[in-house]
Amino acid sequence: MKSVPLGQLTRKITSGSTPLGGSATYLGAGPVMLVRSQNVHMNRLDLSDVAYISDETDGGMNRSRLEFDDVLLNITGASIGRVARFDLHTRANVNQHVCIIRPKPDLLCSRYLTYLISSPSFQRNIDRLQHGGTRQALTYELIRDFDIPLLPLPEQKRIAAILDKADAIRRSRQEAVLLTDQLIPSLFYNIFGSPTVNPRRWGRRPLGEITLIDAPMVDPRLDEYAGLPHYGADRIDRDTGRLLPAKTAHEDGLISAKFLLDERYVLYSKIRPNLRKVALGERKALCSADV
Image 1 (cartoon, rainbow, N blue to C red):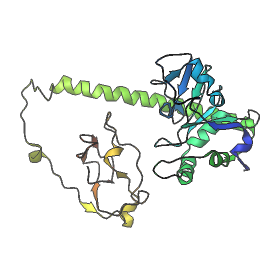
Image 2: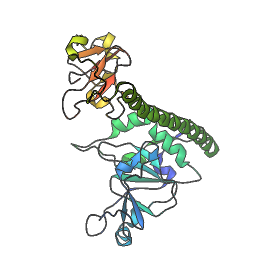
Image 3: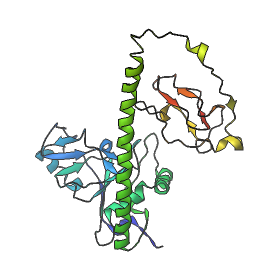
Image 4: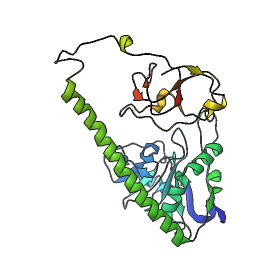
């Protein structure tokens, strides 16, 4: 399959800008939407906290005005690599942490490009490319040199349509999981009452009398453990108690001993800023000493 540098397939690659005379004044509402890096999530825009700017501010940011079907890519900070398609017919601009990629419509489908950049293999490539001191960044030059598998345009659109359907199914499942997560606490309170007030006068025992803290410490460099996922406190979702995707011990480059766990264990984070997160161990894995 032929690969082509992204720069040959686009009309424009640029980031947002600050207005003439300094930083923008954000408004709670206004004529022009300002999309920032926190609004760009993987394959979707989250506009729940989107900012707005005035006509005057927008007038000083000519080069970063958005058009329908632009692809937005975060190019700095912790959210580097997150990508979404701008699918709104509204006046909008972006700040300097977001790159606008505007494909040539006769060569490259925006939806296909968005899914391609969000794929695990492409994200690993971005991890290798990003550079900088304390702040990671992608430059225009690196983005223009992205190798894009150039399929015929109808095939690109066909693939994008299939992935659109798959993404819709995934989102429906996420909504179902969220509803379940909200239902479980309600069921707990209905059955047991408030654990703080204890209106049903359940007996109480010290946790140490009814549990064991016995997870063995193992060397993550050994072959039998190097391929296991490694969960730190940051890999526990605070709101749902679910384990987030984690790298293996080898991918994390671990050298110090870690706890070995399986589905019998409850994980509880004990060090700030991740204090009091809790999750069930879902499978054989490793966890840090912070848990």
